[in-house]
Length: 580
Image (cartoon, rainbow, N blue to C red; front, side):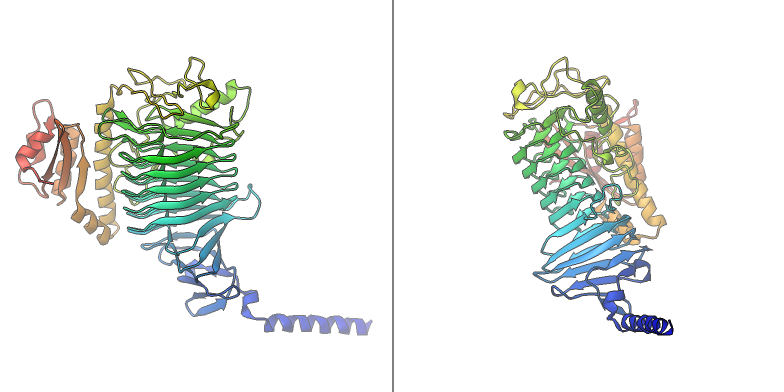
């Protein structure tokens, strides 16, 4: 008996000694972001160094946890290697990029728990700078305990993708992961930062994604002035995408193009273009679409934008200054799936109402005519692309109807579902009295927007309250700008405040030249804050530009007429014309 005890005791001692003498890599694994910046550097197939302060270890699969408002994670992968990191309930709010990737190789981010990152100005929430692929995934195989991340870009930065002037390319979201990505001003939710493209973006397997573009940025695709291309949505994915002001939900920013977009397998997609003439899927305002394919059992709901008398296609081209956007979609291999095109301006709530009613009237199917999936869960709480209220984006005042933000919020009933008038055998819902539309009044006084597989389109009469919508949206945009400036000053963010003051406020009125008392009063507040406002407008097909100077000697409110209005021409008469 004593011998046995002796053997056990000796065995235990030897085991303990082995543990104590093992390389630190075996004991390493968890890194708390609260303790300092974390740098991950993959140099070979077997070597991945992780360092934080004085701690440095070879850790091929580190888990990062904790919260910080000052520290960041930098992941570098050498060419031909893949750096791997797990985020577990990480919360980072930084003045830089909370998470950034570098090097010539690939980076894989595994998600456990629920993480949130918020970038500072000019940066993306997850900023992709590596040359290889960036994969965000949850490979656990459990949809019930799926890892998630909410990534918000700062001013001019994508939620996931490029920072200011940075492309967002070679991005994959897969597994059971749940991703919410919100772009900052002029940036995509997933894709390009300001003025840049988003390409080779793949959403696959069981991923659930909600992506919202900032002002003029696509939900998924290009930032302002950027294109969205080579975007593939496949598997059993559920995707909801919202374009910023003049940008597509999926595709180009303003005035970018959307090309080589494929939605296939059992994917379920809702894509809503920005309010100003953009396509739901395809080109931004004035942008074009090529090679858009919907096939297999995919179920797609798409909404284009509408303003100034012209609408963007649900799937296809954005509107131009003098023409509607035409539908451009190849559904040749769409088998049991379905495409539904809605009136421009239709809100996410109205789409959900249509879907639910269709489900009820189809005998309880989850998705009549489609894959059997529920609408993307992320859409339930997302009224429009930027209602989170805290994006670094001058356009996001919380009520985005306008030139100044993502713009799906329009008065209730502005967009009744109007599927296309195409032959019954082409898999697009036919336009008839039996169509299951939401029970909301339509603001259209004329024919409904419709489309068919051949790209044909029918003009839609402008809503009677379009001017009221525009002015309300314009005022919301100016109020949002002032709010952002005030918050920057109060928080001591002088860099952001100075940048906003230097760039000034920019407004494009289009053909709407009459400004009401509220608008003029707000512009006077902007002037008193020491900020100039540049105003573009069109009169008799001629483009004009004027500017209300900072600290204007002649108050804008002094120019109001007896009815409380001031025309853009009157502003230009007082403050002068700026030659473009």
